[in-house]
Length: 282
Image (cartoon, rainbow, N blue to C red):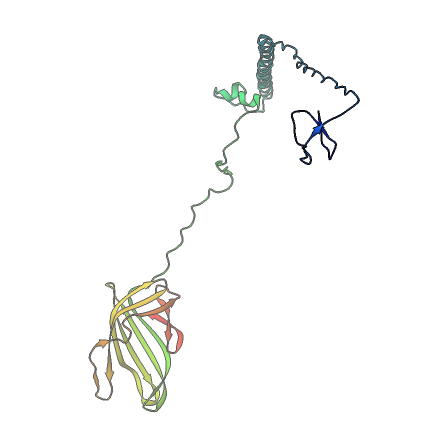
């Protein structure tokens, strides 16, 4: 045995240096005899407890119990069906006996059908399917039969023919200010063409229904709008007392708002002056 001179720790003879401070070990002098206790013998671990054996349940007994329960349920179901049919037959016999015993009650003959002889099975079992959402309407015999829904009349359209409208308009020409009355005539033809004429009445100049403007082109009506296309115009020259040649209008296409269209009249919106003018069929 060896001993460290610094920390006084003892080691076996196989070591030469202290494990704590690294000092060189010396031979250990001990007057007392060191008794080394024997190492305890490790106790071996106990084996795990053995589980009790599982006794398998016989499958035959389980199916036998289920078979008995099913047989009892089937017997009860058949008994209920027979009882319901017997009650229905008894009720039917009582109803017929009551009808035959009462002479004032008219007798009815029933054609043989499954619904009059026995109660449906789904009624007894309570699993009849629910009725579909679409059911046929029940009509009352006392109420008149419903008439067909009225057909909405077609929107009135502009008919062919000659229409005339009249309105007042101020004029300011060559420094002369006056009021004039204008009459506008439109003739709508079946081939889609139209013609127009303008007549002026100016009281201050003794002019009465003087033709001063002519127009022609094509027309169409859609969504309460009268559209004039390909417009050609010619004006009367009062100084030369002659008509000017036909020329394209300033606006080759013109849209005019319509309202209150009927077979004989309609109203058209005029921009100058802004107003609704009524045109009547001549």
